[in-house]
Length: 274
Image (tube, rainbow, N blue to C red; front, side, top):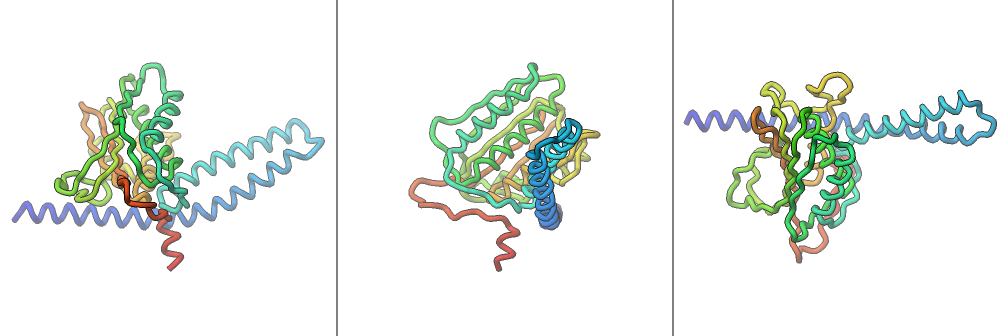
């Protein structure tokens, strides 16, 4: 009986956290949309000004800074939109292995010499209905997070697999509890760092929460969370001070013969349409 009460309280706490994240995401997504419109105007007019003849070198330099910072601001807004599940996704059937391989190649260019990536994937295609750009962004964020967790170097392991939890129900999604059904395409990223401190574990997917110190926005994992949930997926975290941290992303696997899956749209768009 005591065990049942403990489990019930844990589920209630998880549900409350999930509802809080969803509420914050909806507010953040709405603000980000408006701010994105402001940035678009700044970027457009500064680019038009750069086309003018007779600009002094000083004015041209200042306009170039405005353009550069506008692009950085737009990237930040995109992270917030992804967290708030407010991005309008362009979904199609993709082979997850191809998208993951592209992300690994991109990440390798940013890694120091003392960090390698071990990429393992099955030979058979892993078809999912997804926006390849957003999935690639989620994986890149996890790889960057793994890099930052390994200042002395090591190997980042990236593994792809398919799994069936229709009977097991043993995998705990960090956002919504046990994964109890369906077939999934799984991406796992394992670092060789020192793990996530206990006091930070419950908040790692919150926007603007970070333990990395000055200069970090605290949006990387929040963006991953939003992208995965907008695809109808799940995310799990396993961390240990000696074993490092393992993130696993689960996307609904598209089985052959199912036909064309429905297009995924943001939560916010769905609500506004009703």
